[in-house]
Image (cartoon, rainbow, N blue to C red; front, side):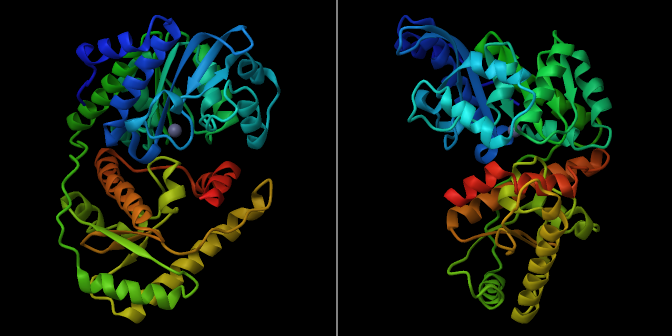
Length: 418
Ligand SMILES: [Zn+2]
C-alpha cells in the first residue's frame, strides 16, 4: 500500500493552523486522517477512527491535556477539525481504574467531558485512544491485516509477520472492555508501535503524526507481502462489470413485496466482478457465507449471513427463500437475545445481501444509499474471504459475538436514530 504523506501538502496546512502547537497537531491529525480515508481497504464506510492528544486552554482558562478524537457521523475521507471533538483527557484516564462501566455510562462520561457540549459523540473507541500514551493514534480495519486477523492461528501470524513491534489483542467486543484490554496489553509491551486486534483490525501510534500514519501503511504492506509470499495475495479491487441480470432484479423486487408486504420500499444494488464470482462460485459457498463478517462493525450493515439464490429462480422460489431467510434470522435472534444483559428488539428480518450463485451480489436496503453500502462491504468481503481461505481458513468472530455486536446497545441506539 502506498504512503500518501507529502510534506508539500502538510506544510501549508501547518502554517494555516497558526502558532499554537495544539492547532498544528490538530491540522496534522486532520491531514493524515484524510489520507487513511482515501484508501477504502483501510476504512470503508466509517470503519476507522483517529485521535491526537494536545495541551489546550479551556474556556474556563485552565490548561488541560485534551484528546481530539473522531466524532460519530464523520467520515475520515472528508473529516475537518470539528469532526474531531475535544475531550478532557484526565477524567477518561480515571475511568480505567473505575472497576467497569456500562456502555451508556461510557457515552455519558465522554459527553460530560466534551469542551463543546454541542459537539458530536466521540467515537465508541475513545477510551482506547485515551489509554495509549502516544499523541497520535490511528485505527483502521485494514483488509490485508484482517485476512491474518481472521485466521485460527492469528496470534502466531501476528508474531511471525510483525515480531514484537506489534502486540496481539485477543477478540473483545468494542467498547469499555476492549479499551481496558488494549491499555493493559500496551502496558505489558511498552515498546510496541501497534496493536493487532484479533478479528477486528489494527491500531498504530506515535508522538509524530507522520510516523503513526506511516506505521499503518507499513504494517498493511507487510501483511500484503506476507499473503503474496504464501500464494494468498489479496486480489485488487476491480471495477464493477455492469452486467446486472435485470430480469432477476425485477423478480427479486416482486418476491420482496410478496414476502415482506410491510416494507414500503426496497432498493437493490448489483455488483459483479471476477473476485465476486470466485466467492459466489465457491464450492463451499453455503457454508463459507455463514461464518460471519470480516470485522465486527460490518454485521450492523450486512447481517450475520446472506441469502443465496440462483439466477433462474422464479418469483415464488425467491419469495420462499426470503421467508426462509427471515425465519433463520428470527431463530438467530431467539437463540441469542435471552443471553443478553438487557431486553433486545429484533431488527427487520429481511436479507441485506443476496448472493446469486456463480454470478454477482445484491446489496438490499430500504434506500439506494444503504443498498450501495451493503454492496461495497460485500464486494470487499469476497476479496478477504478468498484470500483467507487461500492462506488457511476464514475464522471470524462466533455467532454469539456477532449477535452481541449487531445488538449492541450503542448500535441499537444509532440504528433507531436513523
Ligand atoms: Zn474498529
